[in-house]
Amino acid sequence: MSIDLGIPTVASGTEGVPTLPDGEKQTRKDFASDQEVRWCPGCGDYAILAAVQGFLPELGLRRENITFVSGIGCSSRFPYYLDTYGMHSIHGRAPAIATGLATSRPDLSVWVVTGDGDALSIGGNHLIHAMRRNVNMTILLFNNRIYGLTKGQYSPTSQPGLVTKSSPMGSVDAPFNPISLALGAEGTFVARTMDSDRKHLTEVLKAAAAHRGTSIVEIYQNCPIFNDGAFELIKDVEQQKARLVHLRDGEPVAIGEDGERELLVRGEGGSVRFVAEAEVTEQGLADHVVVHDVTLTDPSQAFSISRLDSESMTHVPMGIFRAVSRPTYDDQTRAQVESAVELAGGPATDDDLQALLDGKDTWTVEG
Image 1 (spheres, rainbow, N blue to C red):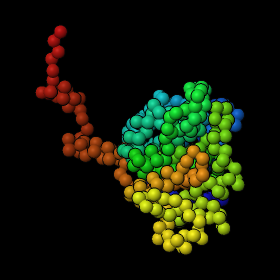
Image 2: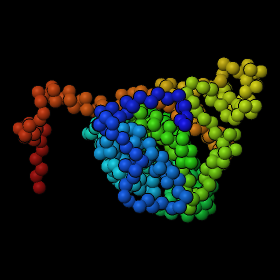
Image 3: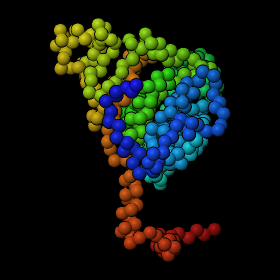
Image 4: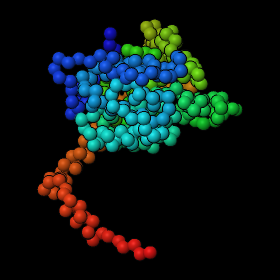
């Protein structure tokens, strides 16, 4: 059973990537490597790996044309466990390496796997510029709100006051909201899902892979050793009904179920708040109800929805915040190169290189 997120699933994100011959099918086993999966028992990474391995066959792409690039951290072991090409790269630099791959190899489906520490601390600069440039890649950001690999220091998404080995009296850092950050960087596809919701996770992954440009998917993921229960409030089925704001394109942003449903309405100064559905008409707020639209060029509405988040997890938006079309960095770069080659009358030769070296812009360094 699929979940209708209201997003078109035209696979333009994989345009140019070789597909399987007609009639050839793949299964989850085809994407499972021969390496022993080694995460702590109960780690949310297991569920994400199973979802990705189960989803990849649906792309219908050759395995040798799929590449996973990771940085450093527990999540970054991901490439070892997939029977595709991949690279366990440098701390925080996975988006930069993936940018080079996506630009030079249009025949590849490029994925980045990173964590909240890897992506938002040492790698923060690379992450925001990948989104700003709109490179054709899919970024999976595992957020467990802790440094797991290095044994439990607070991360850029840890809650204020969290007691860890690096903050024995409680963290005084103000945490990032990864979705707000992505929208502020003009990310063209921004979404959030959760490790324990297999159906929702799979549908969001499908939409992310179909998008041409930078897709970033924040995945809430539990670390049972160093930050167990970080998302317990929204993993409980009954609590989900009152706390999760399921985003569906073209529908009012709402929370709760029949009889207790509340709608998001615009207030003064661009603020938003939830009002009981029965009171919306009574207060004359029908025209102020926020209808979710992922295609809005201006990310302001999506940003205001992302700010519903709070430490108490009273209202947690879940789903696709933004999905807009914009020219990609790699497509435009390749077009420039092709244009330059055409203007030059063909590819450069050894004589062209020598002429460049012997040109006027030279310096002599004397000892």
